[in-house]
Amino acid sequence: MKRAAIYTRVSTLEQATEGYSISEQKDKLSAYAQSQSYDIVGIYSDEGFSGKDLNRPAMSDLMTDIKQGKIDTVLIYKLDRLSRNVGDVLYLVDLFDKYDVVFFSLHEKFDLGSPFGRAGLKMMATFSELERETIVERMQMGKLARANAGKYTCPGKCPFGYRYDKNNDCLTVDETEADIIRKIFDLYINENFTFRKLYDYCRTAYPDVKYFSNPMCCKPLIERPMYAGYFRYKGGELIPGTNFPAIISYETYLKAQAQVEANRTTRSSDNTPYLLTGLIYCGRCGNRYVGKMYERYTKKADGSHTKHYRYRDYGCAARIKRDANYHSAACDNEIFRAEDLENYICDFVKNIDIDDYDTQSYAPGFIDSLIAQVGTAKQSQERLLDLYINGDIDRDSYLIRKLPLDSKIQELNNLIEKESNTVKTSVTDGAANIKEKLANFDNLSKKEKRLLLHFLIKSIVIDGDNIVVNLKLKK
Image (cartoon, rainbow, N blue to C red; front, side):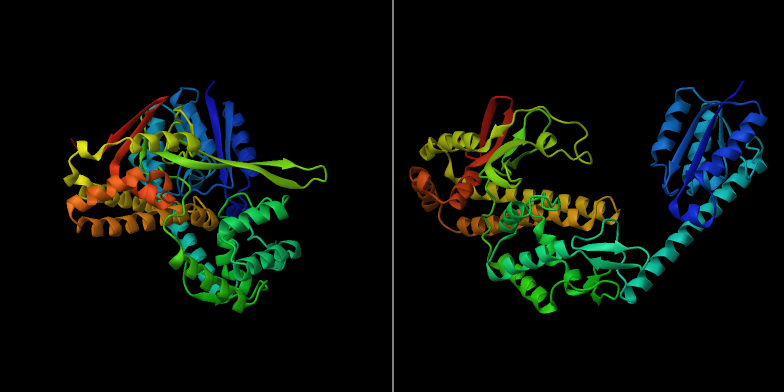
């Protein structure tokens, strides 16, 4: 008896307009399998997934079971249930052939054993792909038409402060969240709160609001024009909204944006709490060590929360900030409390005798490394933008993850400019200046300490408890 697998797929739009329900596909294919005396060994269903590619959980399971020799026949209701991409269809047919699996479509009834059958398959797959591209184009035109009419379309999760009214195709104001938004704008404009200070305030004042889970989560709120009654379509000009009300005045929004720009212009480039950012590398997997802030809260008897303490750590990015898109496997290298590691490196640097080294290679090598770091950060920005464009992350996540990259690039460019000016001074004066700073290291500002560390250290490599400091200086 042949072992048959039934594969079904439906997207929300197709289920609503074409009647390709999962249950209907299963019923018809099961009846066909019984009529042929097939043994149904599995039903693989992807509900709510597009046919644009093969990145679907049930499809992945089906291909795995085929490769393991568990299936003799694959039954589908219609070819476009398999995929709407010609290349993917042909790939699957080749896969079926390779593992001696018979493929049968109830709707088209292809005979893949003949040249005409294979030609018909390719033609149907081509028209299916064309149909999908036409649908996508119409949807984009529909979205543009909605935007031009002032109708905001929720990309998924409804923006903080609003609730989606499906029946009336509009957003309504959540007054509780709207009051929080008004308070945030007031604190930012009139009390000069920073984004991090707003986060601290909101975590304490609104402990039960889940939105405030990231130190920079208030930034997209301040910069969102929706609260003033406008929105942007694909990053274009502001469009007055017709299907949602404003929460604040447009004047308030403009004041907030002016404050954002003022803060961006006057903000010190030294706004990170980590002295060793960009210097530390993991000796096990090669990734950078990055800083991470931890906060601990205690719950009072009345149910409110109060901040208990905050601490900083350095750890391999593939461990403490692992992103599966960039780190395929987690790293188990050591995590260090930031204060302990910084004190260790600072003590090491303070004991350097500059007279033992050649002082002619200080700044140029340092500038080269800074330029390379700027390039790496810009590549990270491009990868992040690709994730946003492809719809893998939403706009808020994109902005939250983009901010530290922007800050890092700005800081590096400031360092490059400063060091370029330093090169113009004499080597002797530069060496004397370094000696003076080392002698007075404990009294330097955080910014001056970081600059000096980057000036002297090429890299810090950590493998467990073994810490190796590689200097840029040469004897």
